Each structure stands twice: as structure tokens, then as C-alpha cells.
Amino acid sequence: MSKLWGGRFAKNTDLAVEEFTSSISFDNRLYKQDIAGSIAHAKMLAKCKVIADEEAQQIIAGLLSIQADIEAGTFSFDIALEDIHMNIEKRLTERIGPVGGKLHTARSRNDQVALDTHLYLKQEIVTIGQMLHDLEEAMLAKAEKHSDVIMPGYTHLQRAQPILFAHHMLAYLFMLVRDFGRLQGVWERTDMMPLGAGALAGTTFPIDRQFVAQELKFGAVYDNSIDAVSDRDYILEFLSFASILMMHLSRLSEEIILWSSAEFSFVELDDAHCTGSSIMPQKKNPDVAELVRGKTGRIYGHLMALLTVAKGLPLAYNKDLQEDKEGLFDTIDTVKFSLSVYASLLEGMKLNAPRMLDAVRQDFSNATDMADYLVKKGLPFRQAHEVVGKSVLYCLEQSKKLTELSLAEFQSFSALFDTDILEAIKPEVCVNARNSYGGTSPQQVRQAIERGRGILAAQQSTIDTCRQTKI
Ligand code: ARG
Image 1: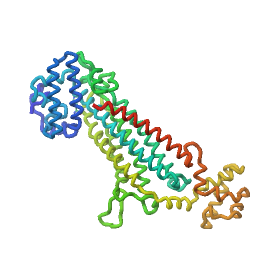
Image 2: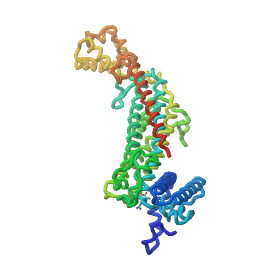
Image 3: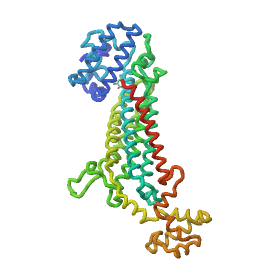
Image 4: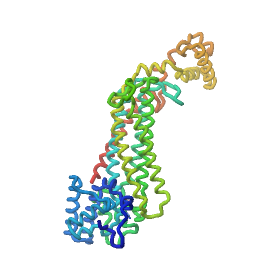
């Protein structure tokens, strides 16, 4: 196979080297973006009179016929042609003759690959943004559906204070809302058009980069040609967004795994989201949650890999940068997969509300409320802490709960206790009382759900606006 760059070479490429340097096995994913970019470039060359209108038309028709072949599965990619860019360009010239060779005027593969990846990532950001939004909707619905379920809240995985399950769910919702915000930031910096940078220094032809940006619905063009072909920070930012999102989902997964264990028995997952054991007939394993937790590791790996690839590279393009794609593609696939299974995992998750409430009743998570009771009667908080600490120790020795103490027992720890103490330390009362902004009381949770709803509506219109730039 003769190479598009064959002129300077006296020898054929070593076959192993051909295989080693080729990226077609994975960058064929970019065919649509490569063709859309080439069509915009050809139109621009004609508009700027670098090529004739008829030549541009021939090129565009040829490119569209190649796209049809690729989509019909009749196009065979060749590793000797290295990457998607040269596979398409070579076939174009075979199909329409030497005029196909004019397409690469005022362009380099360096700005071409940057353009393709920007276009591809923009499109995937919209898809992922929508999926993330849909998961947020599922979380909000879950919180709303179980808005009166009380469970223990934990610190150090020790029961701490009673909370509403909805409040716990909303904690994840607001984390995902920030993830969405991060994704919006990635969008802004991916919505920049690199074509026209040439190999690195711009081009001697009178091109119109704004025209190409408009054709491809980019919001801005790269200001510096060297920057445009050298950096992959927009990919790194996407990988960072993905790492943080997966970290959030991984933490929720960890909780769901714990909650569905016999020891907790707070939730039961739908059979459709679990698998069995090949040896132990009784097992029902929370595989989906485990895999989301597990796959988080490879996303971190992709982020670290690209940070490491980029850290020592002199400007401008280096072949090392070809290593950006597999990690990016795998991250996109993994995040989409995880998001798509997660909404239904949550929907199908049944809560064992009596068991959750029972866990609260069996513990001392109302101890802070007992101390607050004394504070409201005038005792400084530190002294109240001491009084309640002693009461807890007494209960542990007597195998009792705080709610099982008699008034005389309460008053042996402090004369400030009165008959209303038993009411003050009931789980419902403890939860209702945490009515500070952002707290777990039903009133605060209702307001948080309302705020969440407003945020999600705004997200949807952002997604719809971005979707209009689809090419
Ligand atoms: N396949 C290459 C990549 O993904 C395209 C750019 C090649 N440029 C070059 N000068 N060899 O990075």
C-alpha cells in the first residue's frame, strides 16, 4: 500500500511498525466527525477560492459516498493507512481521482485529529449530560417517594443521628448536580475549533476559520495555532469530571452493597439487577453496584495515563498524543453504561422502612437531642454532653435504651429532666427538630426537593441548547 506521505521514503514501513503506529482499530469511531470536518473544510476552501466550487462539490460527494459505505459496513479499513484520516482521504482519491488530493490543502492531520476529537466529545457530552440528568431525576423521585422514611445517619460508619432517607438521597443528588456543572465547564472548553492551525504554525493560504467554526457549530476558535494542536486539556478535564462522577456513584454503590447485606437489611435490590452464585444457591449478589464501584478504578487509570502522557511533551504535536483516544473512548462507554443501569437500579431498590426505623430505635443516635434538651433548659452544651455521656454508659451497663429510662433515672443524671424528655428523644421528633437550612427535617427536605426540581429544569434547557449544535 503506498503511503500518503510516501514521497520522502525509499523503503517500505516495517510491518510490525505499521501495526504499532496504526490507530485505525480505535479511531475509526471518529469517521462521522472526520467527514463532517472535511466537508466544512472543502466548503471553506472553495469559498476562499483556494479550490474551485466544482472541485469542492466533487470532494463533498465523494466523502458522502464514503460515509454511506462505512455505515453500510462495506468500507474496509486498512492498518497500512494508519488512521481514520488517511483511510478516508486515500479512498476519496481512489474514488474521485487526483482532485481528492486537494482536500488536504491548508490542513494537517494534527489539526484534523484535534477537530475530530472536539466534535466527537461535544456530542458525547450532550448524551452523557442527558443521562446524568435522568439519573438525577430518578434520585429526586426516589427521595420524594420515601420522604418519610427515617434511618440512622452515620459518621465513621457508627450510628450518629437519625435522618430522613430522602435527605441521604438528596446528598447524592446535589453531588451529581455539581458533576453536571463540571461537565458544563468541559463543554465550554471543548466548544473550540482547532482547524486552521495546520501542522502547528497556521497556513500560507487565505483560509476562513470563523466560517469553518460556524459550519460545524462551534462557539469559538482556538486563538493560538500551537496550542490548538498541542494540548489535550479538554480531554483531561472530561476524564476528571468522569473520575469524580464515578467516585460519587462508587460511594453510593458501596452503601447500597452494605444496605443490601443481611447485617443491614435496609434495602432489597430487584432480582433484575442482581446475579446468583454458581455454587451457593441462596446468593443474590449486588453486581451492578459492585461493577460501578469497580469500574471507577479504570476511569481513574485513564485520567492518570493521559496526565502522564502529556506531562513531558514538548510543543507542538507528538505521536504520544495518539494515546489520548482509547482511554477517552473507554471512559465515555463506561460512564454511559454506568449511568444507564443506575437509574433503574435505584428505581427497583425497595426500602425496608421498619427495619431502618428499628435500627434508629436500637441505638443512641438520639443522644445529641438529649443534650440539646438540657441546653434548651439552660445547661452549657459541654456539661450537657457529659450528663448524656454518663446516661449512655449507664444504659449500656443496664442493657437499656435511653427511651427506656424512667423519669427517676433521668433525674439521677440531671434535675433539669422532666416528663417531656421521652417525647424529645423520639426519632421522629429528633428528625423534625433539625430544621436548620439544609438540614434533615421534613420541611427542609421538601424545600430541597423543590430547589432540586428548579435546578434540574435549568439543566434540561442547557442540554437542549447544547444539543442544537449537533452536526
Ligand atoms: N492518528 C494520529 C493521532 O491520533 C493523527 C495525527 C497524526 N499526526 C502526525 N503528525 N503523525 O494523533
